[in-house]
Image (cartoon, rainbow, N blue to C red; front, side, top):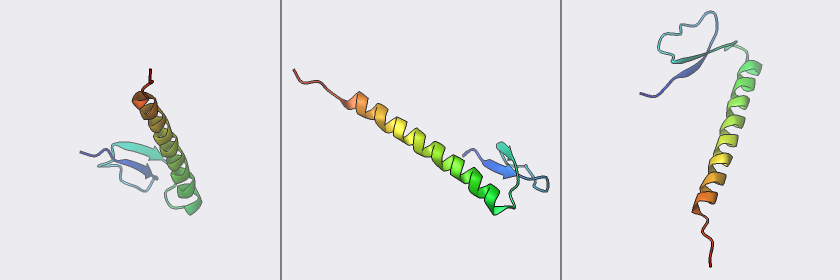
Length: 62
């Protein structure tokens, strides 16, 4: 199945969560901080993947 990541507060049930991220899931500022970090990491990973794909597909002409 698909791994589940979740921000889990003290009043949350972590059953069914594969990767627990302890934190405040009620405050919009906290959730914005978490999602901003996730988005930045995804962007960085995608740019690295695109760069490696470009290097692999580059063919030198003789």
